[in-house]
Figure 1 (cartoon, rainbow, N blue to C red):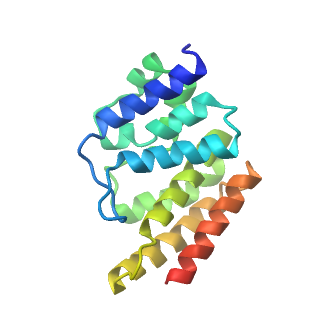
Figure 2: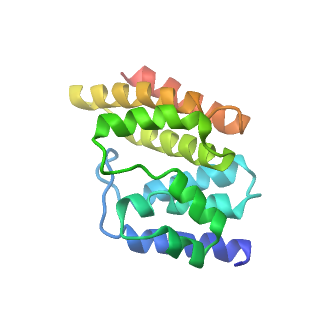
Length: 179
């Protein structure tokens, strides 16, 4: 097993390389790596940096879903726990979007504590990215729809980390004042 700082650094490096050239919705098409950095940073902050594998999984949470990265590769390079967390938060992209969204709501209460933390941090980051100055009607509608859905997912993830729950509530409060 890599020392904690190396584990997080190597995860950030792999995430950046695998998501190279990808842009993110909202925030003016910023590089996708900014989302991964934000999720990892939220996780590091709310756990006071006590769980390097969780932070590494935060960096890597979309790699299996968005790239050709495999669970086996993550287990080999990082750890079995990192790989398991990433796979646990990975959507089945073969399903239509409405089914994927419903599945997230239904599956949330059954996730491991670490996966719940990643899910909440991911939703915080995605809500924040949708809060833009002078939003168009479409942007306002997207923010409202995403926030309402995210609240349903996070309802099944709450109770693991009070700081993270409060941070999600603040993101929702800011979002609702914008739509």
